[in-house]
Every structure is written in structure tokens, then in C-alpha cells.
Amino acid sequence: MPHLTWQKSSFSGDESGNCLYLAATPDGVLRLRESDTPDEVIATTPARLGHLIRSLKAARSPQSPHAAGRADSGAAS
Image 1: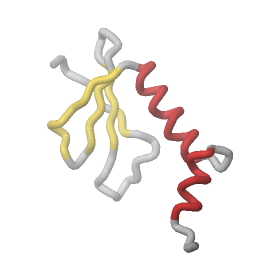
Image 2 (image 1 turned 180 degrees about the vertical axis):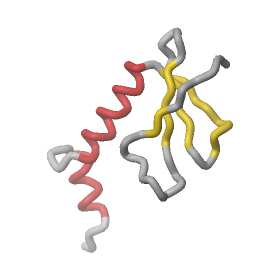
Image 3 (image 1 turned 90 degrees about the horizontal axis):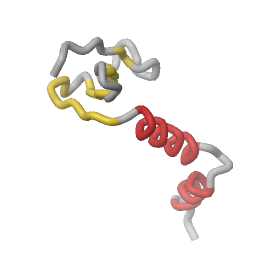
């Protein structure tokens, strides 16, 4: 693997020790790793990572049917 310049996610805290890092290779492949297991690196494309992020944001949205289902799942009958 070529030398990569890793960038810490803006959502990673300074002190948690549980950070996500991202690097791009010259051919456009994105590499991701976590600070607690830096030798384990996964590869993806910008399109697939974008789809994952949009899906996660939609699931957290109050308008999402998935978010409403999670909120109701803990209610007692």
C-alpha cells in the first residue's frame, strides 16, 4: 500500500481515543481505519461512503420511519 496521509474525522473527539481516520489513494479509493485498530484498514469508493453517510443520517432524522420505529420499540404496552 502506498504511503497515505490520514485525516481524522471532524466527529472524532480529541480525548476519546476512538477516532475514525480517512485517506485517499491516488486511484481514488478511500481507506478507513479506527484509532484503536490502526492496522485494520477497509477500502471503499466515494460513492459508497456517501451512500452510507446519507443512509445513517436519514435513519437518525426525526422524519425517518426508521427513527420513529426505534423510539416506539422501548415503550411498554
